[in-house]
Image 1 (cartoon, rainbow, N blue to C red):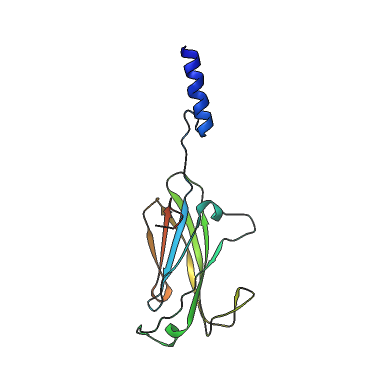
Image 2: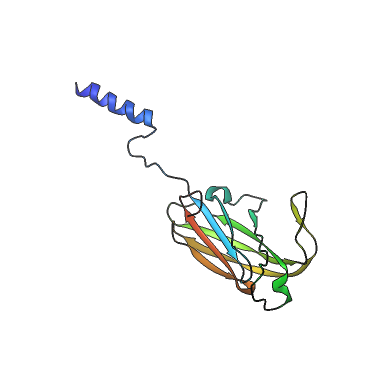
Length: 162
């Protein structure tokens, strides 16, 4: 009787996809948000494992920061279209993940796309120095970028980045 009960339990565990001694892990997502003093917030959420470092490749994200009417501009550059380009690598880990971030904040005279790619002359560019940060799921880290741009990075189990 014990033998048949054990077989039923093992069979039910196998059918549900669970095995003894193994934890089921939910995928983690990297939720990022960027906002300048004169723009709305731009959010991007991607699976964290998709940003693992690859040889001869970069994980690049482009953020559109359009100046909104009604904001107080400090200078003429605030009236330009800002397009930060960030290179982001998420190193593997269990709970705490190390994230490598670098990039450039580019200002364009106009926002123009050709075949889905941003084109045009960069009016001004500011480098974002390379940084390594430690992320724990659910705890956001806020980075200050050039010209008062706020970049928020968070590991989350929610696909929507919440």
